[in-house]
Image (cartoon, rainbow, N blue to C red):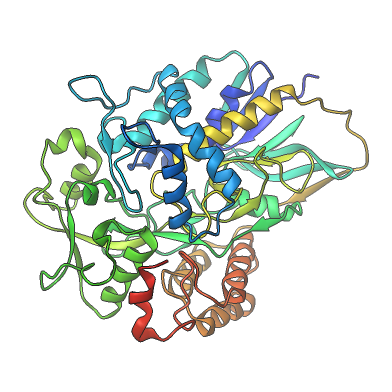
Length: 488
């Protein structure tokens, strides 16, 4: 059959799936570069893997479940953590040069929620960019992969009850219909739907909305992770990330009076899971006080260890080696998404999802730091290999197009982002969620962004208890909220 596997999205998950699908023909569709740069390229943290002395996949799995508030699918967690060492080896064979010490051993960092140092980096805090560079080169050099940039997939072709094609539009709006033996959504998360995010502008949930329009089931939409330390640039939407590895290297969070922010909140201090730290930062900011990250005692050469953070800070007139860094929470990762099994199957035949747009239960209610690149590579390899061997029956049934829908105007998108930030940020209440849902229904133009936002708001409203990154301030007395958070 000449019809290709169509992969929508050219981040880490999409590229890995494409490479693993050999020798089946693959068409890799990418919204483009520039403002639609994949979030994978911006990942600073690294890849979690139990490769150090005294570490083990079971310990990695335990930390993953603790961070996820035990809402995780334990079988998927165990599989992913067991795959992590082999995933590092596969990436090295693709040309990724991981950071090593003078003896040739992998340099391992530590991040929040991890009991030991197990984070593997490439180029210090430029890990995502290094992975993207290597995998993109491999894909372009592979005879079975054809890459097409600058196109947006806005509709799926269904025959019978299965997906058998896509419709794409280029920058001029010209449409093209493409038949496919399978369609894989690897479009990333939804961070750009919030007023403050560490994600690029193109990470707006477009793939999730497309899958939902086709009738694919969703899972855990209410669970959005907010990274506690994005660079606090006034009035900016997409913020530079200040990697958690800095706190792993000794940086401390302070309030404007110089007091350590996490003292008395959690025994793990600045390396508590991200949801706990984000809530602490959020509450201080809501009181009108600034939060700073003091990294002046971090040792080593910044240009090698933290080149991305150093460049971002210097661009704002801040030298992190000499002065504390102003930080803020920012929407960072969506634990929810299109419900898939471990093989990437959605509830719609012929439609698959991998990476952040998918939810297989591995992250639970709160993703453990540096598990996202691991998931994208490991699950992409598994899905690609399965699709290469899949026998595709001849297309049958009436053809029909399912469209994602029209987009909101820019001004309405701005209002929606602020609405989600205020109502569905790190700290939520039922009243605010209900009001935001009503405003979406009554006060915004129709568009796929508002449809997606309403689904998220409804899921958050309906989960009345606090769990992981979904923190309902009206769930328990506010006076004990932070103390109890330390056990989550």
